Image (tube, rainbow, N blue to C red; front, side, top):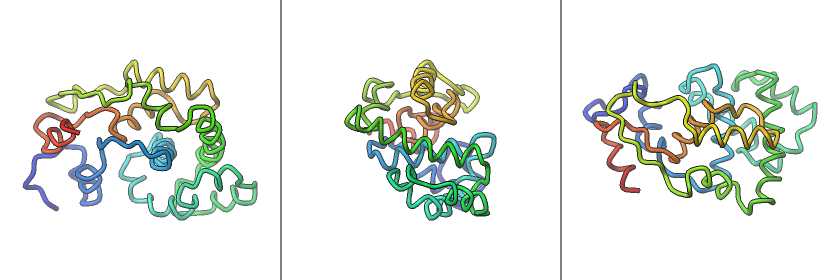
Length: 192
């Protein structure tokens, strides 16, 4: 593993984690399909470690038709059962059902808002929140913005979108920069 750079301490346990940290985490995402994928993966992570989901990410992409919401929204009970037999993903009935329900609601929200991205980014006034935490101990689990996002998504019927999940999602898709200040990615992301 490449340990010559100073990184957030949470990503040091594997090369996959470091690559995710170095290339994806905190980079602003505006693409509806990427945002949908991350919403589903963050929901799947509930109660588990993020590295567990990263290790299964390619399996998720295969199992869920590359996160094609139109296809997922039409999954039948038979397809649902097949997913629950797939050892490559988290075989939790509530989480699998949530992915299907969330796909249906995602499509509905796209129609209403023009884009899923526009809808989500409104919670941070359309631009990333630039935090400056010196240590992971300072990083919150939720914020007023994640509370508002969670409340609105739940009101619309989305599943696995509690405030903690929403905040982790916001961190992942760059709605907030929560790289610690001595991490080499902090300044890179801060300039975006």
